[in-house]
Amino acid sequence: MKDIKNYTLEELTEALKDKGFPKFSGQQTFNWLYKKKVEAFTQMSDISRECREFLKKNFYVSGLKLLKKEVSCDGTEKFLFGLDDKNTIESVLIPKKNRNTLCISTQVGCKFKCAFCASGRDGLIRNLLASEVVGQYLGVSKLITPRKITNIVFMGIGEPLDNFSNILKTIEILIESKGIYFTKKRICISTCGLIPQINKLSDLNLGVMLSVSLHAANDETRSRLMPINKKYSLKDLMKAARDFSRGRRHAVTFEYALIEGLNSSLRDAAELAKLLRGMPFKVNLIPLNCSFAGFSPPKPEEANAFKDELIRRHIFCTLRQPRGQDIDAACGQLRAKHKHKND
Ligand code: SAH
Image 1 (cartoon, helix red, strand yellow):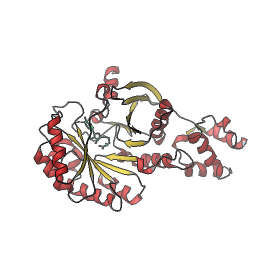
Image 2 (cartoon, rainbow, N blue to C red):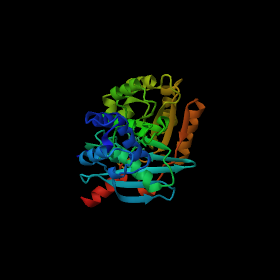
Image 3 (cartoon, rainbow, N blue to C red):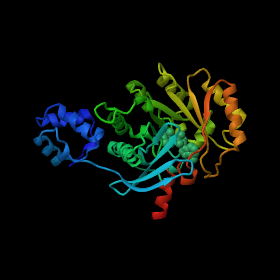
Image 4 (cartoon, helix red, strand yellow):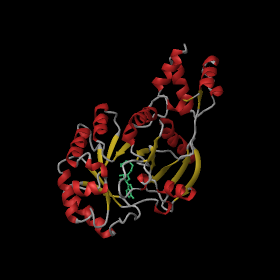
């Protein structure tokens, strides 16, 4: 038996065509599964009986198990899901004005070990399947009905570009017009800076947005915070980002977590402005969410001064407030707590 949610429309159409079923039966199945949200093959009434029987014998429809839901006093909602192999992942919904942004996980754990991030503490356990990534979108959509998810960011646990083929497949399923038909521009992939994969994404020209976790404007500080910088230097990373943004407006956003005494002085702001000068890039500043490993966020005045300095130097930036702190909503925190409690 195969999980039908791991199939793109093209793959499903091919699998059905191989068995002699018409081309449109793949489209019909997608329509039932993702538009009408009907999961029992027997109820897919416009599909021929033989085809329904074939689907029932060969495929199953997976779903994630909600283990826990927490709502922060600022409206952020956090969902802890259980997978078939008993691993857990989390998704976070961030409501803001008329937007509902869903932050989804792409791996169980993470191997990149950024110094300030909870996701990598226990290393990488495994990649998520496309069905498990799409499953987070479907699971949360159902749980928050009638509200709708308007934006998807691959900023939960894991490094999306380290799970490249499954993430491509996920995007293909999400944007398929016969299914979920999610707007490409409202999907953002976030990376710690895997240059070969950023280049592949540029070549594929999928129409999705890219966010790069920068966190420092020089190699010394960045390597200290993000070990991946020892492999892919800032200079090369900036080139990859420039190549990605060519011909696209504001297609690259840089994430910059402000950390007291490390990257949040006015001198750091000046260095960052110099690094990004003349590029159509946007910077998302966020005071470090929670304190651990000896790192803490700067005082609000310092964070504001950093932002003002960037603006004075003509860098387009926003200063976000950390959301959901009371429910451990930063990457991997709820999962880490759940895991350590159950160890
Ligand atoms: N691996 C990807 C996506 C997951 S992390 C990446 O590195 O981009 C999503 C974002 O949250 C990244 O920008 C990451 O650096 C940031 N992040 C992780 N822990 C954080 C913390 N404690 N405070 C603020 N931002 C954090």
